Length: 258
Image (cartoon, rainbow, N blue to C red; front, side):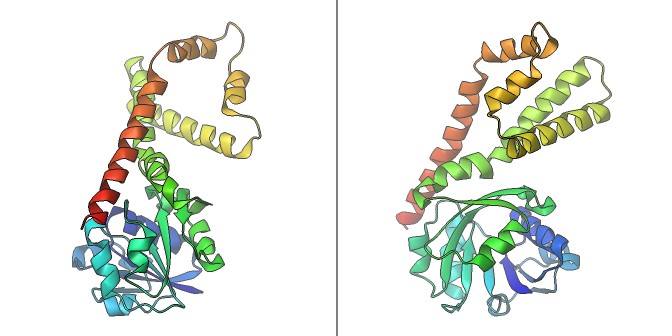
């Protein structure tokens, strides 16, 4: 079993803890200064603590705190070269953290779907061990990218769930407006998004080819697709991703200037 600690038990930290607990193949220590945050994850952990020294005993240490305090937390951790530090701080480079620790540093951009084991995660770092990838694959799918691509990954898979929730809700509300029961409309919309995403991951066809497979000539889907293709929805989504990417770049600049 791999001993993992998660420092910071907010939304993302607790999602990682719950996701790791699903496998039963790790011992997890949760660390936070807020007793209520620890209470919310106690049942999913082997141990909870407010002490960084205790959290630093793990083989893999996840630092899941705000970017502006990540460097300070890492400095306070006394990690060795045999350990791995995994940071999720948007805009905080591995160079910044490597100067503050002897541990191997991995930068991760996860998302909240870690809780259900369906996370999309992007990782970068010079030393990404198999133990780290194995742990992360227990909570979803991870892809390795160059660190200079981390800002756009932050926008695509880090912020992306919120964009999907927004679009899913739009489909749901359209169904409700036309007479569907709200609960049933949500189930139909959510399962449709889930099934479509699974199809993209499992099918060798491109998304354009999959759209064509759903669109029968003179059928219902093609009529809806014509509306989408004649709209500015693609440009709007691109603008949303670009805005999130730009903010990630701004955070990096703020950290670099500290």
